[in-house]
Length: 71
Image (cartoon, rainbow, N blue to C red; front, top):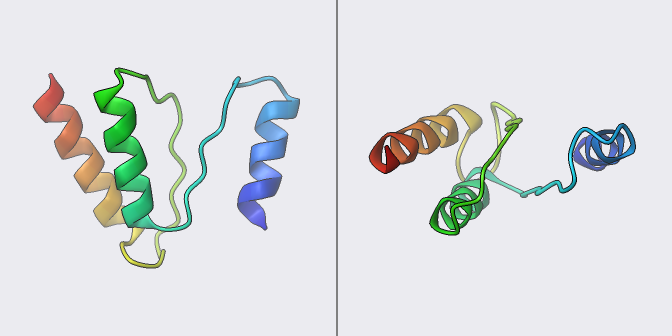
């Protein structure tokens, strides 16, 4: 429920043109990997610390490691 409220608020305030939401940490990492492969930027990431399949801290570490490889 919270992610839908946040998505709506971001779009309503016109802070972004698109919002990508995922259900768990693994899904986030897959989505982030796809965006990197498509050379699409990511401006904001909000992660819960405790998510199914992979926690937010682990997902953030994976994301940062992937960013470093792309530099």
